[in-house]
Length: 222
Length: 222
DNA sequence: AACGCCTTTACGGAAAACCGTAAGGAAATG
DNA sequence: CATTTCCTTACGGTTTTCCGTAAAGGCGTT
Image (cartoon, rainbow over all chains, first blue to last red; front, side, top):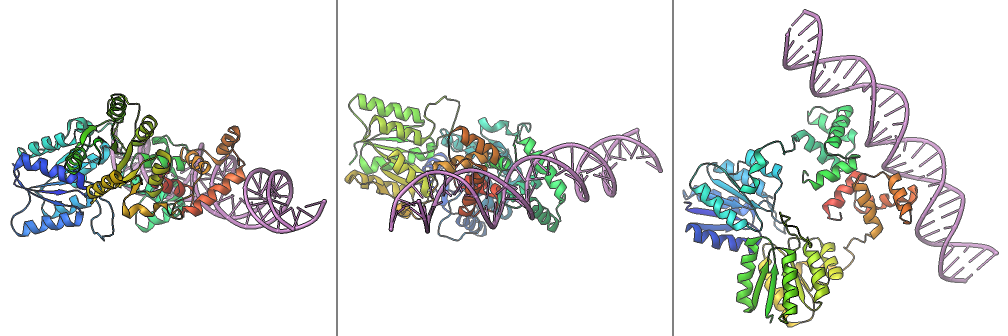
């Protein structure tokens, strides 16, 4: 079982309940942080002191407030932590339930478990902690376990995402082309960008570009 | 002080912590519900039994799951509850922090207090409960209390909202004009619609219509 | 009735997006 | 090496949007 756990979560109501729950479950040493930066520093410090954490449970979205922060999201935190201490196991505990997002967390951030906050969230969290404690396998809660069956996952590349993002901030197709050229990103011709937007419109069943961006926002792509 | 409190919240981690907190604070009889429908039925039943609740604390967004539900959001719940038992005090406890949304909750749903989930959420919740217990005034947490100073509130009419919505579902300006004409909605000429979109673009500092819709989505207008 | 003020509508030209087709080039296949 | 295939780019014509200007109509004031 885990010996030293860090919980990163800004909503205090959730934090207190998770702490007391894990305290009973694991008898581990439990610390907590309300900011990503704070969490990262704690991980780093613990490592230097040779008393590293062996589990990080973190939310994905943190509210902005007056503080200036370097790490702004749970995703940022996870990436930084995994660089500093790759073997540290990480469970993401978030309201997010869009499969392609969760899949990306496993594949790109290297999380070890995912639990969706919800009506049975705390039970699921316990299961995840127990599962990760006894094994080197990753853990995905049952209702989400189909996310790796690829077919229901939208195959949108980095490039498309960038394109959609640029559109959403008001750039014209010309401007986007120029931007791609400057970044050495191909294809970058007006024609290709036009074509790609067209593909995306088909894909998302959008009547025009406005509709496309609207749909992309609804799907949480941007 | 309140004697009988109902908490409507689907995330169990939050629910448990709020319950234990209020239990200590008020010594009231505390019930809870994970679905809006469930909460509404409890309010109704308690009223019929002549043991009505005197405080409802509710989240705004509830996850959809396998269940068929009538009330889908906290807003729905609040409206229904206020019809059934108008004097029941309601505190909304949500992650939402957009002022015009919160303002609408006070003005259109008749909530009595608003607390934003966050780093100091549970403290704020206590304050709100204490404030409402001792007074008939509404309670807004300090960092939000400026929301009634109107000037920073976007004055968007029904008409603009409809316009933005139509744009977001991919209608052309022509089509929107036709739609408005059919609905007997003025102005409905292409020229006027064009002008109105232009105003909105200025208002939202958008470079083009795509950008406008993108911003509107971010602001939660649609 | 005459006047200013405001909203709605109309229109024309420029810019951007939309759409189909085709040429050029690179990698893959045989 | 030739051929096919896929991807990128180019281009011309149509539609839609964008932008400025101006006319038409409603409304209250004088």
